[in-house]
Amino acid sequence: MTETASTDARATDAARGHSAATLYEASSATARACDPVLRGVWPGARVAGPAFTVRGIGGDNLALHRAVATAPVGSVLVADLQGARHGHWGEILAVAARQRGILGLVIDGGVRDVSELAALRFPVFARHITVVGTGKEHPGEFGVPIRVSGAVVGPGDLVVGDTDGVVVIPAPAAATTLDRADARVAAEERALAAIRTGTTTLNYYGLPA
Image 1 (cartoon, rainbow, N blue to C red):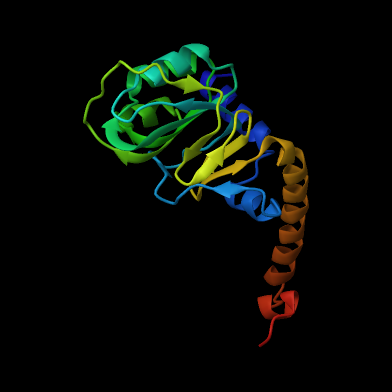
Image 2 (image 1 turned 180 degrees about the vertical axis):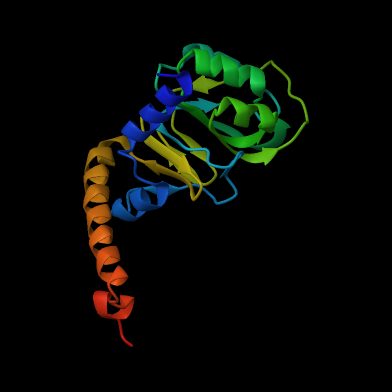
């Protein structure tokens, strides 16, 4: 199995293949949605896994270098860089993260080297894409609750990002949310089967005509 396939498989397993939207709808109000400005930086990017939280200082990426060397295999780096318009992450850090078994990055800040990130198929969800450089002085903090694009993220929370956006499921609610998502998908499949035979959505859902 290739490294990319392995990463994709782990991301799928972490969320049982469910989309960010399905998980949010199935969460019974426990999920937290990041602001829609936080988007995948290349088409089709998807990530799912437990959060390794990073609090750094906008315009400085030493914390990210340290996080790549520290985060456990199978984790998603989730970084609060205060929305700073700097290229905190690029090809070199992505290659280093892939070598360490890190699944992806969600960052409230900017990144660069988007073409290279796409070629690597390393999933990155960011607020900005920019060539502006960074310093390397602030060591940052790891494993602490942070706020990323309006969503509170704790260490180990399930983070899922795809073409619809990024959601955070608190760790204690993750298993229940995944079970509810399974049930929701099954219900949607029944609805689609009925709609494909001619039933209107008004009739199926009992909506007023």
